[in-house]
Length: 473
Image (cartoon, rainbow, N blue to C red; front, side, top):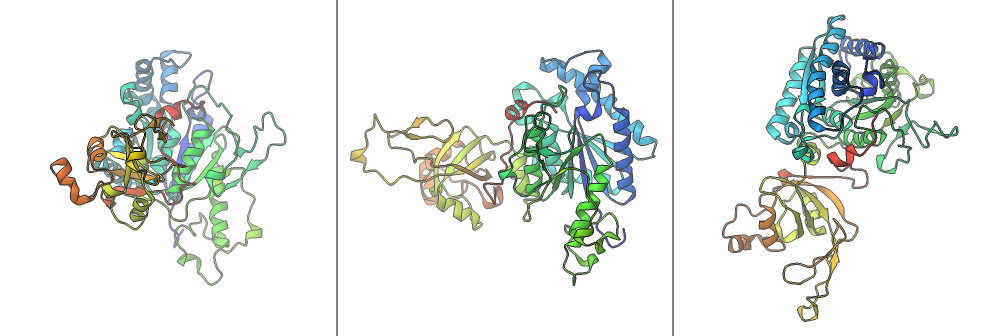
């Protein structure tokens, strides 16, 4: 391992990988193999994070409840019961190999607050330095229905992707009950083809109908969302079978040896960039591509070569958007050139939000100006991107038509929705006269704006409702 960068590896386990779907008894054989794999990686000098579901399922068994209830307070109570027993199980298994572990419970609010986000990053760093394996889970006991949109991640697949971005992981393994993604359901279509490598998530055509277990809140579709989030942060993301955790080491060995074999012959392996040469075995850098071992069956999502990291990722995916600003192409070009967002570039406002809250940025096309005398104030309408409803502004003048709206980023705003509605389209010098004050000439400072670089390939942070609608896995 000398001369090679150590890897940071996040392993996500769903409830079906931790407990039996019917009896809710822990799957000790799988858990023991996960523990052995994680400890082997630690001994090789790597850093490991486990994102573990299963608290509610373990609580079901402890309290003798057969089915997951629908009443939210009851689910939270079962999560509280199961969380300590689940952590006790992990502690017991790792103790046999003298490996210390730590519990980290996260909520959406922990991620949304920048200070708490950085504190979580610092905690991970110190745990890594101490040789401890963090075991992460969402704090289900605090996620109540009234704040579900803000607080809930929706599923631990999303949580694992945000965690991987937070620790700047090299790999995220989404362990499930199938080997990989298929273009069709392999259970009903014998001719289904495995999808082994995905270079562009937006163009992926895969079967996501697998229902999985009745214990979790995710599904194959949420794993694809997680892969979008993680790859945008530069994390290689892998879907593989949880019943054979040894695949983790074999897949990493294959991918790292493949990267090493593709290096130019005049570049020494120990001088390659960290992302290109981090093999688990120092001897594999001399392999040729045609001599690489056959890897275990899996689906691998290629990371973005120009990843969104740290604050930019936090702005895009750590915050819940409270509204939308519709901007014109000129404003978008200015933002891409590192300028701030001026009121002149804002076309419309949607939602109710306060200062320093996050909003979506959506690019729209402006209509040619219509002479006021030709405007029929009772029969002029345009299209809204939100619900395709007919809308006019307060003076009866048509709002600009939203043509193929594209979300291009997120921003923390300096003014509330009502204030921006009053100053949209104006020059910055007019803000004081309209509002009576001018906190800033910019609606959003450039440092508080994060743009998606490739609109077709970039994910939109999933809401709790969209995630919970997916089938369990």
